[in-house]
Length: 246
Image (cartoon, rainbow, N blue to C red):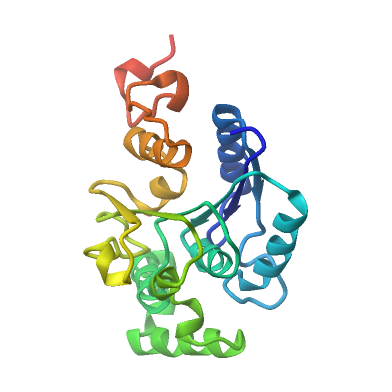
């Protein structure tokens, strides 16, 4: 993939080290130039990363790459989908995309309010209704509407030649029920790959052999086997014997 460009839009407050490792790995195994856009929260005025779309669009035009591939991780899917709606790109990849901001906000609140350090005394003052109001305020302060960040609707008008979506039913931050069939978007070129046991963090870090192999296969159009450790390495979980170092 030499001469081709991959642009990655990170999720909200994604770890720079994780992004750096993904960037180096992807460049190494594909030969493509890989660049990382700023995080959605990396600006004075929060706007779900949409304020980074124009600069990246201008960067792409000046880069003169033979093929353009856009990757959106979690909240980064908002900016990625917006860019692919405005710019001709070869492919768009959305990994654990934030489809519904309100439901994701509620999921995060539920997840962290279970922590005693956060639920006391915060639990006394915050409710589901408060979270609903917070989501409205965030959109209002960003001068946006729900339609502005509607990823699924943007895909229907995307200029990307190919769209691949990766979701997990075990993702506790974004919904794993993206779309039942590509026909719901009014186009047949959308491929939705589903996984059953991956958390949000595992999805964003591409920490799974099947996810890694599928992602590379879709990106390069060359089949990659899950057992090809020379390409995708080995994901070690818990105390796996084969991963222990003497």
